[in-house]
Every structure is written in C-alpha cells, then in structure tokens.
Image (cartoon, rainbow, N blue to C red; front, side, top):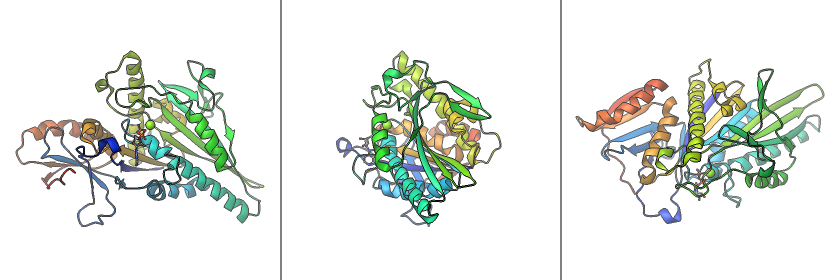
Length: 376
Ligand code: ADP
Ligand code: MG
C-alpha cells in the first residue's frame, strides 16, 4: 500500500494571458531545478509572506501529457500486471485541468492519462500473450460509473434508464460490489475509445458560476485485468477517478440543489483526504468505509498503489481555493511557512494551517523569508 501525491500546474488559457499568476514551482535548495518538488504560493493576506508545499513531484505549466504519464502512471502498469491494484485520482477546483489530465483532448499529444493507460495495458497484454505463446490469456473489462450526491450511476447506461436513487451497493464477503453495474469486455484501444466517448456523454454536469461544464460528480473508470493460465486466475484493477470540483461552494452563488451536491462532495473528499493520509503514514486503520467512493474502491485495503494528482491553476483568482487544495494534499506533507519577522498577520495566517497540520501530523516549521519569485 503506498501513495504518491504530485502537483500539476496548468498553463494559462488564451483568455487568461497577461493575468496575475501567483503559483511557482521550486526545487529544494541545491537540487536539480529541472525536477521541482515544491509549490510556493503567497499568503492571501500579505504578498510578502508565502507558503511552500512539498510533493513527490511537481509538473509545471509546460509539462506535457506524455511527461506526466511517463513519470507517474506508466510505472504503475507493472504493478497492475503483478496482480496489484492501482488508483489514479485527479483532485482540484473546477477549471484546474482534472478532466484534461485524466481524459485529455482528441489529438494524440493531448490524450490524457486514461487513454494512455489503456494503450499501455493493451500493449502489455499482447506482449504477454506472445511471450507465453498464448499460455497466458489476458482479458480487459471496464466499469464506468459516477457518484453524484452519494448515489451511484452507471455511465454505460443512458441517463433515461437511471433510477433516481442510483444503484445499490452491497458487501460480498468483505468486498463492496455495486449491484447491477455493467461490466463491458473491451479488447482493443479503438473499442475502448468508442465506449469511453459514449459514456462520457452520460455524465451529470450542471452549470455553476465557475465553469459552465463544471462537474459535480466523481467519475470512476475501473479497468479490470484478468490473467488466466492453465492453473491460475489473477485479477487486478486500475481505477481512474476524475473527482468533483473541490472549490468552496459557499462562494459560487449556489442554490439549494447545489448545496446538497456540495455537502456530498465535501464529505467524500474529506474522507478521501483522511484515507490518503492514513495510507501514507502506513496506519493500520484506514477510514475507507466512511464514504461510498472510498468504500467501493476499497482504498488502502488491497495491495494498492495510489497516485493523487493535484491540479492547480496558477491564477490569483483561484487563490483561496488553491491554498485549500494544497492544504488537502499536504496533510501528508511537511508544511513550511516563510514569515516576515514580527509580522502580526502571521499569527492569524498560521492558525488554520497549524490546525490542519496537527490533524495531519505534519511538521510546521518557520523559516526566514526567502525572496518570492516575481509573479509573471
Ligand atoms: P476541470 O476538469 O478541473 O474542471 P478542465 O480539465 O476542464 O478542468 O480544464 C479547464 C480548461 O483548461 C480546459 O479548457 C482545458 O482544456 C484547459 N487545460 C487544463 N489543463 C491544461 C493543460 N495542461 N494544457 C492545456 N490546456 C489545459
Ligand atoms: Mg472536469
């Protein structure tokens, strides 16, 4: 059981060029600047102060889909074929690039982690079958569902076939199963692309002030890999999750329906954060049963590898939400606070962070102010 938390800063969109950016990537002093691991962001109350957050890796604005895949997702394929489970999450506010990261665009270069992972899985299937002269057979099957307001909906079913309460979930010998969920065998990348595109059209989306196509649901694609020989059957799963937006919905002019959505989203993201933290600290009790999503994924219960990609937009307009996302990810990380000596505002600022860090058991250290990289 292990977890890697990495950050990805998205580039500015055409209509954002020239706007104020506040997020910078850095390397620890004396280390290779080409491989940053630190995100720095100013305090919302005082630009002269900044917070820095340590990650396993930081991908900067110019990082390509290929680089992110090669660095984070490709190495998990071996684990999957050795019989281990893999979970890849995209976490972040609406508009920070979660769907771009997971699904991506149409062109080959823009393809996201999901189609790249499938491509890599099919390549490996063919290699195994060839290397064993057909003695090992590999089958790939897909499940694709969304969790919206704590209800599970099959994305392989058209929306008109949904029951409002969603699909029931049950325990089956300690394993959580979604009753009635479609499992589609899928033998080629082409077939995958067709199924995936169709299913994505079934995803619940509703307009919010932040993003007209904002997604208020978690979309979970499970790729089940079954390797069969004459004597053994080995099943493992790769789950790829495009999470609902993590923004603070009190600031997005929500109506009642949005608020119900928000509280379900907040609860599930909170439990997810606790699970990620518990896994990273190798705790024996992982509270995965406390939300539907973590329960269905059995997060942390199996021989699993979890990658959390924290998507960040570098703009000042996302300042508070970016800080809260960083705090979410940093439950498992060391928090560094750069302060201005004797600056009274510091106490105010550090308080919420100190609470988070004591929850997360992270160390809070004070450092003399280092010059901020100028925003550009
Ligand atoms: P989210 O799913 O988090 O709401 P999106 O994936 O829809 O965010 O991204 C918001 C916008 O930013 C989209 O227009 C998307 O194409 C663009 N975008 C996000 N990340 C990148 C990136 N790394 N490179 C280019 N464009 C990106
Ligand atoms: Mg999205």
